[in-house]
Image 1 (tube, rainbow, N blue to C red):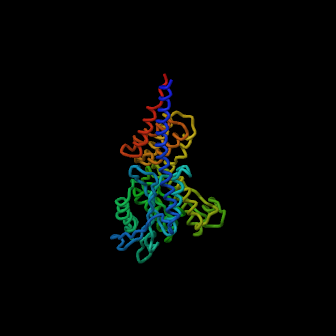
Image 2: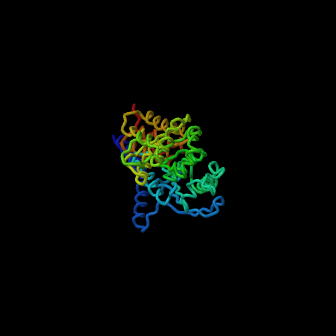
Image 3: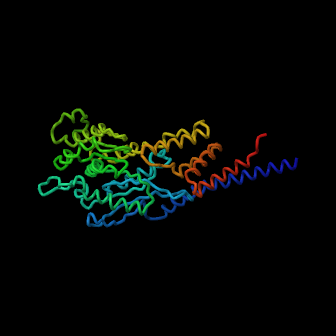
Length: 401
């Protein structure tokens, strides 16, 4: 009787020690987050990124670039590599895009999009950067559509700099609004390979006496957009509430901006590439009020492949551990196929899933998530530590006779 009592007490102590160690890992995450918040509150400045000066040989000048890198709360993870979102008009667009990404990439928002590095580009002269290159007769300069300097700067200087100085994966998105939307559309029409996804907001397609649209709109129907994602937004620039039928019938220059955007949407729909396209008309928003709303909708659209709301049910489902594991694997395998590159489940996401299942008494599901952790991140201290603790606890459990 004494031996059985001693054995039982030893098993209880062993299980308690394992539980304490495991939850110490969870607590360490929370402590890191709390320390970071406390430190931010103690500092006088709230820092969300850095501003660098990058010299451009192509442009012949220094350029200011704003860069946000997600703060990593979880200790002992493998090096995290991020997609990159490029943003025109950084002075007004950088902060809203960083805020949206920060919110929508968290569990608070059901992880609509992945965490990303955000790169904002400032423009000393918006017309020079984002507009057309014109000759002395105000006509499009010969060859400038296919090879403009600002796009060359992005491709040959800015992107290589970002990729060499930060931990990036080769997935890039672009956000352009108004004249920046025209430039985004221009890049998509002539060099679509530069970005995997485009959020184009109320683009100024009729600027410069409609020259870009006349010369380039047809490219949208034929350009290779395979494995791309495009979201196109249109604001109301006529009388509030004007519907699309009335806009199409209007032949004045007042409606040209909107008619061009609608024609561009039609051209996208007629493109035979295998890509994801969405567009939205905001009849109650003017040109100046539409960006933030369209950026929010754009995030939902271009990151539909990632959206973890689709497998949110696994937190409360009665599926088996193997079914939950398969759901996670399948989601990211499908996502990888959609974007044409491997995109692994983030290590932090799998770690949080493991903690959740363990904390809610679903040990078999926690064990299954730890299997994925080690499968995808075999060299991670975090992954191997969690896996070893769970395996030890599994071995320590009394065997049913």
